[in-house]
Amino acid sequence: MPLSDLTRSRGGKIPIDDQIVRITSRLVVPFIQVYGIYVILNGHLSPGGSFSGGAIFGASLVLLALSFNLEAGARQIPHHAASLLESGGALGYALTGLVGVFVGSSYLANRIAGFPMGQPGELFSAGAILVITVFVGIKVASTIVTLFYYIIEGEK
Amino acid sequence: MTEVLNVLLLSFLIVCAVGVAYIRDLLSAVILFSSFGLIMAIIWQQLSAPDVAMVEAALGTGVVALLLIAAISKTKRAE
Image 1 (cartoon, one colour):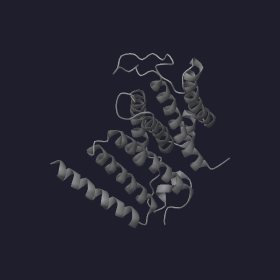
Image 2 (tube, helix red, strand yellow):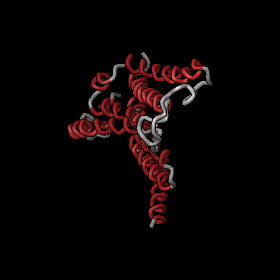
Image 3 (spheres, rainbow over the protein chains, first blue to last red):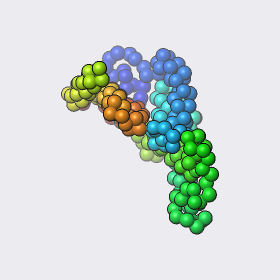
Image 4 (tube, rainbow over the protein chains, first blue to last red):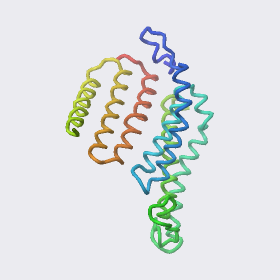
C-alpha cells in the first residue's frame, strides 16, 4: 500500500498530501533544521549533542519526504549522497582520532595533539570535541534518512 | 505543585501505554506511542535529565513514529 493510501483505508477520503500539512511542514522545516544544527554545534556546552541534533536534522528531512512525496525528499538529499555522508561521518571521526596518533600521543588525544582549546564556555572551544560532534551529527542525520528510505522503498 | 504535575504526567503515561497495547488500529497505536514518547520526554526533564529528554523527544516522538508509519505503509493498517 503506497503512503498516500494509508489514511484512506478507513473509508474517509483524506489524502496524506494535504495542503495544510504541506504548507505547515514547509514553514516549520527550516526552523527544525536550524535547531538541529544549533544542538549539534552546542553539544559540548549544553544538553544535547551530536546524536540528538542529528536525529532532529534527519527527522526534518524525513518530514519533507512524508508531507510532499518521496521524490521531493530524495531531491533534497539523493541516496548516493546520503550513503556517502554516512560513511564520511564515520571516516571523519576515525581520522580526527588518528591525528593524536600521528602527533605522537594516544588515539583521540585532544589538547596534547595540538587542537586549539579556546576560552571555556565559548562556541569554538574544547578542541577536537566540536569536530567529532559535527562528524557524528552528519552520520546520524544521514543514517536516519537512509533507514527511512530503505524501509519505504525496499531493497533495490 | 510539581507533584501534581508529575502525578498527572505519570497517569497520562499509563493511559498511553495501556492504550497502545489495547487499540486495534495500528496507525492510532503509533500515534499513541509517539504521545507516550512526548510525555516521557517531559518526565525526563522533570527528573532533571535534559540530555535524555532531548533524545527522547527527537527519537521516541519523531523518528520511531516515522519508521513505524513507513512499516505500516508497507504492510496493512488493521491488526
